[in-house]
Length: 179
Image (cartoon, rainbow, N blue to C red):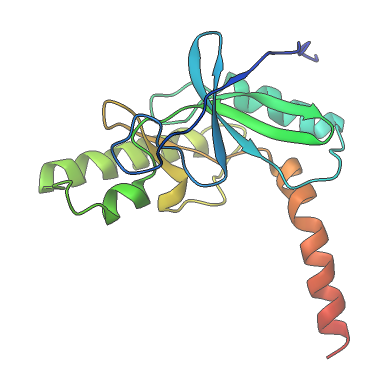
């Protein structure tokens, strides 16, 4: 039932520029690394520890096995303290938010339809999978690859999201009790 996860070695690239159009454009909060000769994005998680529950391992296995043209591929999860991180494929064109705010890119009617179709197909696949819903669809979770194909990211891993959000939520509950 469980997949054996092996240690992977990532080689980090030095980012020289984070300007649109740069080959090393990486979304805020991400680092660029090499894994098996391919560029990957590494998103550091603000956690002091990760509870590797059975549920989290099953969710990780599920998202790693999801394969669709409009979903960003999860490579894995780094669980070596204190460097907790999610590793995904690297989308060279950045986020949809970046593209929409870049006035040098002409987004005509046909390109807009392509973006909408990519998002709809990715969402349809997620809704038909065991994940069932995205939970955080917004323009900064829609990444653009080198062929201008939209790839949805930050789907699944609900158990991990609860671990990152729970401390903030507890503080908010504590605050509202004292009002």
